[in-house]
Image (cartoon, rainbow, N blue to C red; front, side, top):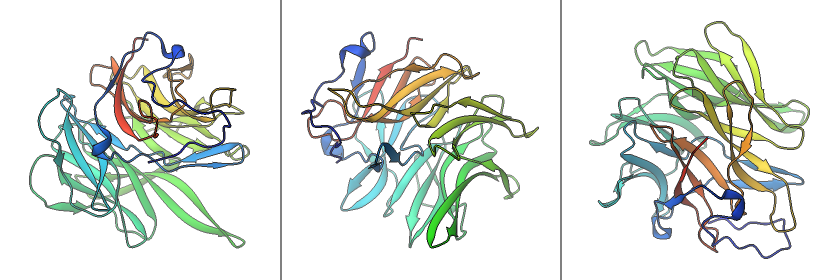
Length: 321
């Protein structure tokens, strides 16, 4: 559970939607008793810091949705049908799962777990068995696994820790693991990779060196070309997800304080060339970790809407642009 701060106005989080979101339909998929885990969201002065890797995942056919739930003080992956009905299934029996992603064939789930002071990436069968393959095992933190469209590689973020004077600092880099050769490859500085359908271009987050705000970049992993897609002097962006047709990107971004709304996290969309930035959500609760439906007509995310307590739940909203 997360309590919003930074605004003197009494917030009404119990609304399913607000007038600015007119025309979009919101459907709630989880309940408060599911104890869905959202990201760590912290305010530092006029900036918000949040955990950006994917906290939910959708199977390639759109029939199953995974989220992190809390039970007996353990954070694990749970699977719920998007068609309604059926029991919620606990898929992992670990201690501290942080994020996850489905493979393109829907047979595997890659996830991050925090164990003994270190984040590493693991893979488990999506439907049966308990055998787990550990992908990374370095002293650095690896997180946010995302499969390539053909399933041969797992892209992820590696955080390398250094000291600047007496202050610990992390620098983030995009890496991949090749399932065929077990080789690791480093590509570029950045985090939260999402690959285009062409299998050659990645959309990532990178913090601006001066403002420290998140920007969205595209990297051609074959040619090494890098293109800035989205940047703002007052707003930070992260968690980009490329649409199934490769034409759109949805991401998380900060919004500014108003008389009735605190600075918080909302969802935005833009064209793959960086044009057409559109704010999609305006609710005073945070909306994070977006995922496209396979047909590109709706978006799943974790949101604090629909409950006065600010409880996280998984929601689906229509996308008509």
